[in-house]
Length: 288
Figure 1 (cartoon, rainbow, N blue to C red):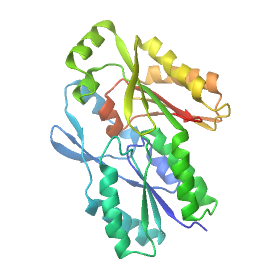
Figure 2 (figure 1 turned 90 degrees about the vertical axis):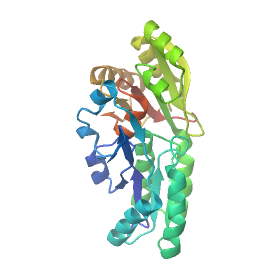
Figure 3 (figure 1 turned 45 degrees about the vertical axis):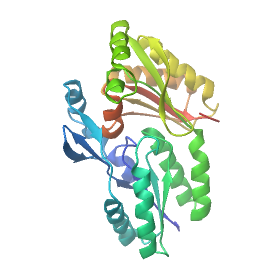
Figure 4 (figure 1 turned 90 degrees about the horizontal axis):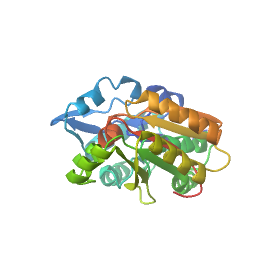
Protein backbone atom coordinates (compact mmCIF):
# COMPACT_ATOMS: atom_id res chain seq x y z
CA UNK A 1 0.00 0.00 0.00
CA UNK A 2 1.33 3.44 -0.94
CA UNK A 3 2.59 5.52 1.95
CA UNK A 4 2.43 8.90 0.23
CA UNK A 5 0.77 10.90 -2.54
CA UNK A 6 2.64 12.79 -5.26
CA UNK A 7 1.97 16.16 -6.82
CA UNK A 8 4.09 17.84 -9.47
CA UNK A 9 4.19 21.44 -10.64
CA UNK A 10 3.15 22.19 -14.17
CA UNK A 11 6.12 23.23 -16.23
CA UNK A 12 7.00 19.56 -16.70
CA UNK A 13 5.54 19.76 -20.23
CA UNK A 14 3.39 16.65 -19.91
CA UNK A 15 0.12 15.58 -21.46
CA UNK A 16 -3.01 15.09 -19.38
CA UNK A 17 -2.66 11.34 -19.88
CA UNK A 18 0.76 11.37 -18.20
CA UNK A 19 -0.72 12.63 -14.92
CA UNK A 20 -3.69 10.29 -15.16
CA UNK A 21 -1.67 7.18 -16.02
CA UNK A 22 0.82 7.76 -13.21
CA UNK A 23 -1.70 8.69 -10.53
CA UNK A 24 -0.26 12.17 -10.13
CA UNK A 25 -1.85 15.38 -8.98
CA UNK A 26 -0.65 18.50 -10.78
CA UNK A 27 -0.34 22.04 -9.46
CA UNK A 28 -1.13 24.45 -12.30
CA UNK A 29 1.27 27.40 -12.37
CA UNK A 30 0.04 30.87 -13.35
CA UNK A 31 1.43 33.09 -16.08
CA UNK A 32 0.47 36.34 -17.77
CA UNK A 33 0.04 37.35 -21.38
CA UNK A 34 0.21 41.11 -21.84
CA UNK A 35 -0.73 41.50 -18.18
CA UNK A 36 -3.72 39.12 -18.16
CA UNK A 37 -3.36 36.10 -15.86
CA UNK A 38 -3.90 32.53 -17.02
CA UNK A 39 -3.18 29.10 -15.57
CA UNK A 40 -1.28 26.33 -17.31
CA UNK A 41 -3.81 23.87 -18.77
CA UNK A 42 -1.39 21.07 -17.84
CA UNK A 43 -1.74 19.41 -21.24
CA UNK A 44 0.75 20.16 -24.01
CA UNK A 45 -1.66 18.82 -26.64
CA UNK A 46 -3.84 21.93 -26.27
CA UNK A 47 -1.31 24.72 -26.79
CA UNK A 48 -3.35 26.30 -29.60
CA UNK A 49 -1.76 29.44 -31.04
CA UNK A 50 0.36 30.26 -27.97
CA UNK A 51 3.65 30.29 -29.88
CA UNK A 52 2.15 32.25 -32.78
CA UNK A 53 1.13 34.92 -30.27
CA UNK A 54 4.72 35.01 -29.00
CA UNK A 55 6.00 35.42 -32.55
CA UNK A 56 3.54 38.29 -32.91
CA UNK A 57 5.05 40.11 -29.95
CA UNK A 58 2.92 38.91 -27.04
CA UNK A 59 4.70 39.66 -23.76
CA UNK A 60 4.81 36.56 -21.59
CA UNK A 61 5.75 36.48 -17.91
CA UNK A 62 5.65 33.71 -15.36
CA UNK A 63 3.73 34.43 -12.17
CA UNK A 64 4.21 33.02 -8.70
CA UNK A 65 1.43 31.17 -6.87
CA UNK A 66 0.72 32.25 -3.33
CA UNK A 67 0.71 30.08 -0.22
CA UNK A 68 -3.08 29.88 -0.10
CA UNK A 69 -3.19 28.32 -3.57
CA UNK A 70 -0.70 25.64 -2.54
CA UNK A 71 -2.59 24.91 0.67
CA UNK A 72 -5.92 24.59 -1.16
CA UNK A 73 -4.29 22.18 -3.62
CA UNK A 74 -2.85 20.02 -0.84
CA UNK A 75 -6.10 20.04 1.12
CA UNK A 76 -7.84 18.64 -1.94
CA UNK A 77 -5.27 15.85 -2.29
CA UNK A 78 -5.43 15.03 1.42
CA UNK A 79 -9.23 14.85 1.38
CA UNK A 80 -9.08 12.43 -1.54
CA UNK A 81 -6.11 10.22 -0.61
CA UNK A 82 -5.49 10.77 3.11
CA UNK A 83 -1.69 10.43 2.88
CA UNK A 84 1.40 12.60 3.33
CA UNK A 85 2.32 14.42 0.13
CA UNK A 86 5.53 14.86 -1.86
CA UNK A 87 5.30 18.03 -3.97
CA UNK A 88 7.86 18.19 -6.80
CA UNK A 89 8.52 21.77 -7.84
CA UNK A 90 10.08 23.50 -10.83
CA UNK A 91 13.74 24.43 -10.21
CA UNK A 92 14.21 27.20 -7.65
CA UNK A 93 16.83 28.76 -9.96
CA UNK A 94 14.09 29.46 -12.51
CA UNK A 95 11.25 30.60 -10.24
CA UNK A 96 10.57 31.60 -6.65
CA UNK A 97 7.71 29.08 -6.53
CA UNK A 98 9.75 26.83 -4.23
CA UNK A 99 10.03 29.59 -1.61
CA UNK A 100 6.27 30.07 -1.58
CA UNK A 101 5.72 26.32 -1.39
CA UNK A 102 8.03 26.04 1.64
CA UNK A 103 6.12 28.82 3.39
CA UNK A 104 2.82 27.15 2.56
CA UNK A 105 4.12 23.78 3.75
CA UNK A 106 4.94 25.17 7.20
CA UNK A 107 1.37 26.39 7.56
CA UNK A 108 -0.14 23.19 6.15
CA UNK A 109 1.98 20.94 8.36
CA UNK A 110 0.97 22.83 11.51
CA UNK A 111 -2.63 21.99 10.67
CA UNK A 112 -1.88 18.40 9.55
CA UNK A 113 1.09 17.12 11.58
CA UNK A 114 0.24 13.47 10.87
CA UNK A 115 -0.05 13.91 7.09
CA UNK A 116 2.54 16.57 6.20
CA UNK A 117 3.61 17.81 2.79
CA UNK A 118 7.25 17.73 1.70
CA UNK A 119 8.16 20.17 -1.10
CA UNK A 120 11.13 19.03 -3.20
CA UNK A 121 13.11 21.48 -5.31
CA UNK A 122 13.56 19.44 -8.50
CA UNK A 123 16.49 21.48 -9.87
CA UNK A 124 14.86 20.45 -13.16
CA UNK A 125 12.61 21.89 -15.83
CA UNK A 126 10.38 20.62 -18.58
CA UNK A 127 10.53 16.84 -19.04
CA UNK A 128 13.25 16.67 -16.38
CA UNK A 129 10.37 17.18 -13.94
CA UNK A 130 8.58 14.29 -15.63
CA UNK A 131 11.60 12.05 -15.11
CA UNK A 132 11.74 12.95 -11.43
CA UNK A 133 7.99 12.41 -11.05
CA UNK A 134 8.27 9.00 -12.73
CA UNK A 135 11.01 8.05 -10.25
CA UNK A 136 8.79 9.16 -7.37
CA UNK A 137 5.95 7.02 -8.75
CA UNK A 138 8.21 3.97 -8.95
CA UNK A 139 9.15 4.45 -5.30
CA UNK A 140 5.51 4.98 -4.27
CA UNK A 141 4.37 1.90 -6.15
CA UNK A 142 7.14 -0.16 -4.52
CA UNK A 143 5.75 0.84 -1.09
CA UNK A 144 8.94 2.72 -0.23
CA UNK A 145 8.67 4.59 3.11
CA UNK A 146 8.33 8.30 2.50
CA UNK A 147 11.59 9.34 4.20
CA UNK A 148 13.56 6.86 2.11
CA UNK A 149 11.71 7.92 -1.01
CA UNK A 150 12.53 11.57 -0.40
CA UNK A 151 16.25 10.83 -0.10
CA UNK A 152 16.22 8.77 -3.30
CA UNK A 153 14.34 11.47 -5.19
CA UNK A 154 16.80 14.13 -4.03
CA UNK A 155 19.74 11.97 -5.13
CA UNK A 156 18.14 11.16 -8.50
CA UNK A 157 17.95 14.86 -9.46
CA UNK A 158 21.66 15.11 -10.29
CA UNK A 159 21.38 12.36 -12.90
CA UNK A 160 18.75 14.18 -15.00
CA UNK A 161 20.55 16.02 -17.79
CA UNK A 162 18.92 18.70 -19.93
CA UNK A 163 20.20 20.22 -23.18
CA UNK A 164 18.33 22.84 -25.21
CA UNK A 165 18.83 25.00 -28.27
CA UNK A 166 16.50 27.93 -29.00
CA UNK A 167 16.16 28.92 -32.64
CA UNK A 168 16.90 32.56 -31.90
CA UNK A 169 18.49 34.81 -29.30
CA UNK A 170 15.45 37.11 -29.37
CA UNK A 171 13.62 35.53 -26.43
CA UNK A 172 16.79 35.31 -24.37
CA UNK A 173 17.17 39.04 -25.00
CA UNK A 174 13.63 39.63 -23.70
CA UNK A 175 14.51 37.67 -20.55
CA UNK A 176 17.74 39.64 -20.07
CA UNK A 177 20.01 36.66 -20.83
CA UNK A 178 21.79 38.29 -23.76
CA UNK A 179 22.21 41.90 -24.91
CA UNK A 180 20.20 43.46 -27.71
CA UNK A 181 23.35 43.80 -29.80
CA UNK A 182 24.17 40.09 -29.34
CA UNK A 183 20.65 39.14 -30.38
CA UNK A 184 20.89 41.33 -33.49
CA UNK A 185 24.26 39.91 -34.53
CA UNK A 186 23.02 36.39 -33.76
CA UNK A 187 20.04 36.86 -36.05
CA UNK A 188 22.25 38.19 -38.86
CA UNK A 189 24.72 35.27 -38.55
CA UNK A 190 22.13 32.55 -37.80
CA UNK A 191 23.67 31.89 -34.36
CA UNK A 192 21.97 29.25 -32.22
CA UNK A 193 22.61 29.17 -28.46
CA UNK A 194 23.32 25.86 -26.73
CA UNK A 195 21.95 25.74 -23.19
CA UNK A 196 21.76 23.33 -20.30
CA UNK A 197 20.49 23.21 -16.75
CA UNK A 198 23.42 23.16 -14.37
CA UNK A 199 23.87 21.57 -10.95
CA UNK A 200 22.10 24.53 -9.32
CA UNK A 201 19.08 24.13 -11.58
CA UNK A 202 19.81 27.29 -13.58
CA UNK A 203 19.35 27.52 -17.34
CA UNK A 204 22.64 28.75 -18.78
CA UNK A 205 24.12 29.37 -22.22
CA UNK A 206 27.19 27.15 -22.65
CA UNK A 207 27.96 27.70 -26.33
CA UNK A 208 26.75 29.32 -29.54
CA UNK A 209 26.91 27.59 -32.91
CA UNK A 210 26.07 28.58 -36.47
CA UNK A 211 22.92 27.13 -37.96
CA UNK A 212 20.22 24.69 -36.93
CA UNK A 213 22.02 21.62 -38.28
CA UNK A 214 25.06 22.34 -36.11
CA UNK A 215 22.83 23.00 -33.10
CA UNK A 216 21.12 19.63 -33.47
CA UNK A 217 24.49 17.92 -33.91
CA UNK A 218 25.77 19.59 -30.73
CA UNK A 219 22.76 18.47 -28.69
CA UNK A 220 23.22 14.92 -29.90
CA UNK A 221 26.97 14.97 -29.20
CA UNK A 222 26.36 16.13 -25.63
CA UNK A 223 23.86 13.30 -25.14
CA UNK A 224 26.26 10.70 -26.54
CA UNK A 225 29.06 11.95 -24.27
CA UNK A 226 27.02 12.13 -21.07
CA UNK A 227 24.26 9.54 -21.28
CA UNK A 228 24.51 6.27 -19.44
CA UNK A 229 24.99 3.34 -21.86
CA UNK A 230 21.62 1.89 -20.83
CA UNK A 231 18.86 4.47 -21.26
CA UNK A 232 15.42 3.56 -19.97
CA UNK A 233 13.87 6.79 -21.24
CA UNK A 234 14.92 9.75 -23.37
CA UNK A 235 12.77 12.82 -23.99
CA UNK A 236 12.98 14.94 -27.13
CA UNK A 237 11.01 18.17 -26.99
CA UNK A 238 10.18 21.00 -29.35
CA UNK A 239 8.49 24.39 -29.16
CA UNK A 240 6.25 24.51 -32.23
CA UNK A 241 8.95 23.12 -34.56
CA UNK A 242 7.72 19.57 -34.95
CA UNK A 243 9.63 18.68 -38.11
CA UNK A 244 13.01 19.54 -36.58
CA UNK A 245 11.96 17.85 -33.36
CA UNK A 246 11.14 14.60 -35.11
CA UNK A 247 14.47 14.70 -36.93
CA UNK A 248 16.28 15.08 -33.60
CA UNK A 249 14.18 12.28 -32.10
CA UNK A 250 15.15 9.91 -34.92
CA UNK A 251 18.83 10.74 -34.45
CA UNK A 252 18.54 10.27 -30.68
CA UNK A 253 16.84 6.91 -31.11
CA UNK A 254 19.64 5.70 -33.38
CA UNK A 255 22.46 7.09 -31.23
CA UNK A 256 21.19 6.26 -27.72
CA UNK A 257 18.86 3.31 -28.35
CA UNK A 258 16.66 4.01 -25.33
CA UNK A 259 14.05 1.57 -24.12
CA UNK A 260 11.53 4.38 -24.51
CA UNK A 261 11.77 7.66 -26.43
CA UNK A 262 9.09 10.20 -25.61
CA UNK A 263 8.48 13.03 -28.10
CA UNK A 264 6.55 16.08 -27.00
CA UNK A 265 5.98 19.81 -27.09
CA UNK A 266 6.82 22.46 -24.54
CA UNK A 267 3.99 24.02 -22.58
CA UNK A 268 3.51 27.72 -21.74
CA UNK A 269 5.64 27.84 -18.57
CA UNK A 270 8.93 26.72 -20.14
CA UNK A 271 7.97 27.44 -23.76
CA UNK A 272 7.09 31.01 -22.87
CA UNK A 273 10.47 31.40 -21.22
CA UNK A 274 12.50 30.13 -24.19
CA UNK A 275 10.23 31.03 -27.09
CA UNK A 276 9.07 29.11 -30.17
CA UNK A 277 11.62 27.09 -32.14
CA UNK A 278 13.41 25.49 -29.20
CA UNK A 279 14.69 21.91 -29.37
CA UNK A 280 15.58 19.88 -26.30
CA UNK A 281 16.85 16.49 -25.26
CA UNK A 282 16.68 15.15 -21.70
CA UNK A 283 18.26 11.91 -20.55
CA UNK A 284 20.02 10.20 -17.63
CA UNK A 285 23.74 10.30 -16.92
CA UNK A 286 26.29 10.37 -14.14
CA UNK A 287 26.46 14.16 -13.84
CA UNK A 288 25.27 17.32 -15.54
